[in-house]
Length: 317
Ligand SMILES: *Cc1c(COP(=O)(O)O)cnc(C)c1O
Image (cartoon, rainbow, N blue to C red; front, side, top):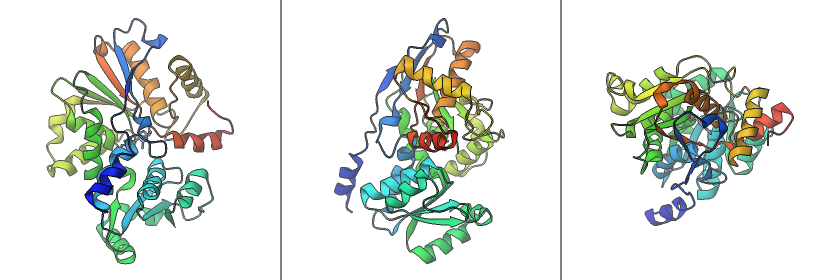
């Protein structure tokens, strides 16, 4: 594929996503202006931050044997990589955590397999080698000159892609985003202007998000001390995970439904739903935000809704 065809394919993705002003009763008397960046509208299959993070890996894969990446059974990143492969004619291999699984075990994996992704199910022990160079070498010996994309796109190319989310939004004071690997947040952090701040809501339990972000900054600059320069520009909130990754309760479901009623926007229950819940909660109680203009990023992930609804046994919307 030459540069021109790549440009053609890139035009399938609408990176210049709209921003919408949010009207919601929880914002009454908060003294803030809240906007939502609709990165969920980048592409119907490859939504949100997953395209942002994959973009430069895709570029690197031109003329190579394909993309190999890692994920759990319901991973939005696996789903996005499979769809990109199908759309752009790139071979994809997904190394899936759990050797008891099957390509038909859930809708995410079924769809990825149908899109041509080769799924390799590995034990949890083997999966732990995902960052090891020796393991990557073995993968390349077996599958040729492939580009290895870290789980969740959490590497250099992923960070570069994520810096582009806030391009053209210099008039905002605060950005708000959900964190899984922390790559999207770190990309935004690297791109902040001096008057700006980024707020991250962890979708995971455990309180290690700040460490993950420091590691990503360290990887990016190849300097283990530079993260200190960024510490004051970013705040991580760890108490809005609703019990842990992909855990959903009635309060969250009802919040997402009412947010949809007020705004017409569907959020996903694993990431953006929890982030917006936490953000509205903070805006009501935290004086730091008074008078600020805030841009929350809808990172997409609506395919994850299907998996959650499968487990809940009812639909959220
Ligand atoms: C994967 C994902 C995230 C987490 O992004 P990180 O860069 O891993 O922190 C947030 N929102 C949605 C919708 C996602 O699919």
